[in-house]
Amino acid sequence: MVETATESEALDAYSSIVTTVAEKVLPSVASLRIGRGGRGFGGAGSGVVITPDGFLVTSAHVVAAGGAASASFIDGSEFDVDVVGADPLSDLAVARARADGLQPARVGNADQLRVGQLVVAIGNPMGFAGSVTSGVVSGLGRSLATADGNGHRRFIEDVIQTDAALNPGNSGGALADSQARLIGVNTAVAGMGLGLAVPMNGTTQAILAALMRSGRVRRAYLGIAGGTRPLTPALAQRIGRKAGVEVHEVVGGSPAAGGKLRAGDVIVSVGDVGVTKAGDLQRLMVEAKIGSRLTLSILRGDQMLNLDVVPTELA
Image (cartoon, rainbow, N blue to C red; front, side):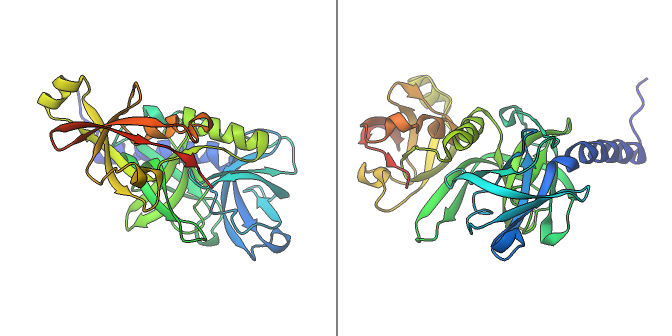
């Protein structure tokens, strides 16, 4: 007969996982101060070391103030930091501490996450360095609307939703799985008990590589926010696909608006490539697609339509 774990045993197991993750990841998380002399006059947030020679991943909005920066770690060490590049669409940025021998976080793959999975958030909220919170993955494939300084709306696609407590200053910090692998970069507090993180996967690894190499990412821009929409069995059988990307919002004046896309449309393919989630679209919006005519196959009600759009370069 198999005995079920008592409540205290379950709590002990949970605590053991969280403390182990914290011990492994905390040395890799920095408190970033951005501004005059790097002493916090422009902004503050968190960053995560990803290479021993000082490269850190953080949020683009954390470094947006520009100017000098500094990174301090839980062992008391502090280093000057140079901002290498930022990508507003993914809200990712790369900075480099003027230091060697730092402890990088082990990077995982968020594409393997499941809703309900335990995650641990580590950052520096409200100026409290090395803060640890935990929770579960509440949702996957979300879209996050943001605005730049010029009043233009942008959407960060395919973000992770978690109930791990996040507060100002957590941005750029680590979201780790139970194996202490970096699977997300905390980006926003969307409401009480609702935090969002940019996933670490093949797409974001390519973005970080481009930022480390040239300080920028050139990508095509459609101007929609969307998420996965399961199709009815009849539609799925008809088009040979179980889901598509439902358009939740179309940005005014965007290529999507010019192509006559509407909220409620369900994109099932781009050219010959099927799409089922926002991340599929994001992966297709590469530099080579800028200025090229793309045919989107969409479902509008019970009709299948082909709409042509010409992506522009994301400014």
